[in-house]
Image (cartoon, rainbow, N blue to C red; front, side):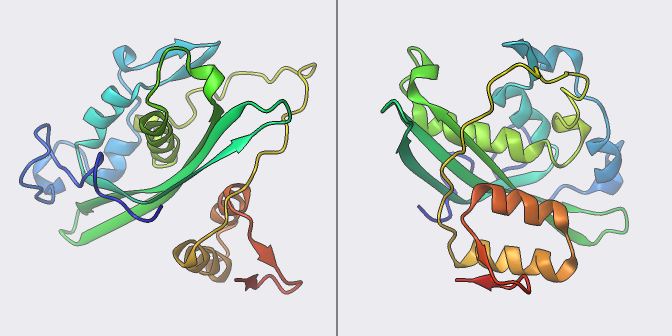
Length: 209
């Protein structure tokens, strides 16, 4: 569905207005130091035996930066029982000044998929999908946004294997990001993109668009 700047328009500070790049030299932490801080205890919630940071608390932490989302995509699917679900992805972008005063931009891809039957009385499935994508992407930036929050949880070896999820068709921007990751040897980004998108590759690793 293309890039978007609607629900998560670029914002800085609690008001979200007059989006000015935050000067890290005037803050108590550098960007790297801030991202490696643990989340506040009151921001961590437990659900279904796992920990997470609710989107409202996460947005407040993200407001340390100028941030926004791009390239939000979603599609509906049905599982083998005919239950309707949604699969979505987006790019979360942080803009800031580094310790030397240079403009810096970092972006990561976040994705989610879930069945509508798991939402209970919540009818706002698209907003929920977008929020989950933001949460998943943010955790890649550092501990402050939830990285490693469930690192101590041991998977249930007796649990049934997860069904293969339906992958989305990548657009040209995603393919450019994939190509850049291949050139840079960024295996983590390659794995993330190929887990979300149906990217066909030749034997030499180059993509087929």
